[in-house]
Image 1: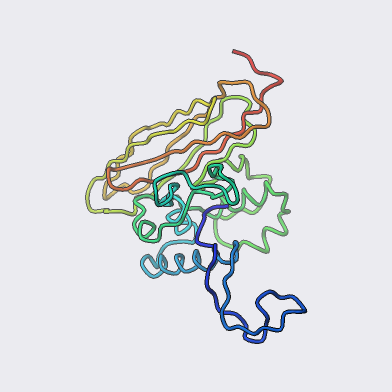
Image 2: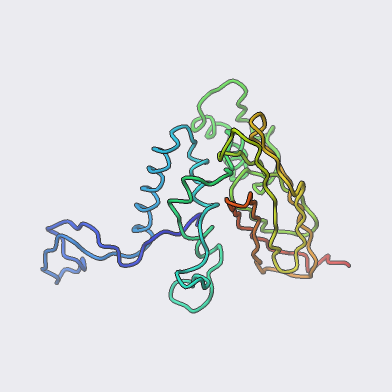
Amino acid sequence: PDITAPGINILAAWPPQTPPTLQPSDDRLVRWNFQSGTSMSCPHVTGVGALLKSVHPGWSPAASRSAIMTTAYTRDASHDSILAGGSMAGSTPFDMGAGHINPLKAMDPGLIYDMKTSDYILFLCNMGYTQERIARIVLPSPGVDTNCKNMHGPNANINYPSISVPNLRSPITIKRTVRNVGCGKKTTVYFGVAKEPDGVEVVIWPRVLIFSPSKQEISYYITLKPLKKSEGRYDFGEIVWSDGFHHVRSPLVVLVNNSDDFTM
């Protein structure tokens, strides 16, 4: 998932002619019912998306998603790790995505990871879509090429708010581009910090991003290097950019898969 939102014991409207358990033997009629699950989280995220659109009408859907993901929190009310559902184990990005949604912080994320049409086309090409099918999805526009033969690169290089590398065998470098949506009338400096996944060296370059009124978009690079022999195990870290007020966090998920060719 990209994000986690309230979804447990949510009081929701219920069709008055439908029994709360949906069992044939249940002849009760109710106007309200408590529901749980992802279908209960969905309207919360939708509402936050509508809130962001009202505050930032010029943002793209990708920008809103970025704001929601990079400002999410990963600690519960007692400042402990959020537990995975039905267990006492701590959640990972596979359980909660970037974390639990925070509407107030999402309205002022500091930096956003926006996406261009080429990002979506690259993703569709890597998913096996044909040029004909992609042309039906993407609106014709000057400079937009839907031919997969001209699209190169793994999904890891798509300008997404999270970073996932499912098959790290040797050092790779990933590119990300961020746009400053905070105070654009003065120079703003962000410092990057990496929490490394177990057995993976992470190098960010540059480590400092300097935004000015004339330069609001900057690219940076993350180099991942396996330091261990492993196969079939995911490890988790994060990339955080901060100007002292905003904390723009991206989950980092890496599977080192080099047991056959690992050398020191």
